[in-house]
Length: 204
Image: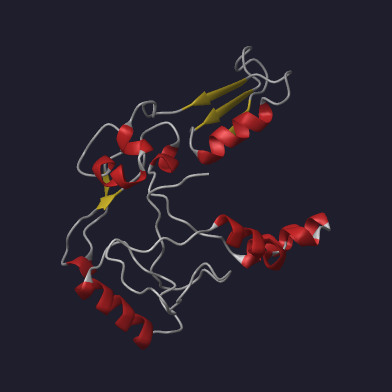
């Protein structure tokens, strides 16, 4: 949230940004490119510096296991579809917000996001079709740990939960309009029910 300060609310800052998550920090960075602006960023959580469970992608499970200082420790209301259970609702209480839930989920985004950029800027290079070759250059598929043949699997998953998965897939068959099955949400059409690819190590 960006709050321009007016009148004599504070003589020290031109802007106060509440929340040091992805959006808050990006806005603060852009504002401070102008040396005439002073910006205060407020975050309710702790620093993410040195928090290994936030730094190492696969360790996010440790970060989210049980109540801790890095989470708001929210839970849902009782869910009828889950036998009236309440389940955790992860929301980060740490610098970086939920971007500090470093699970390394990869997505190319939606074509409906890129194509308007191309239209607004008048630069066709921003369109989905023209950016797709650069996505391919940035991607390298690594086989899963069991080295099984992944041909035809555009959506291998990290974990398998057969009973739950079968029920979800059955839902896409019974209610295809409300819950369409999407084999590959990185195709530019991300809406629908699918598995998503995950990466645990990244080298640039």
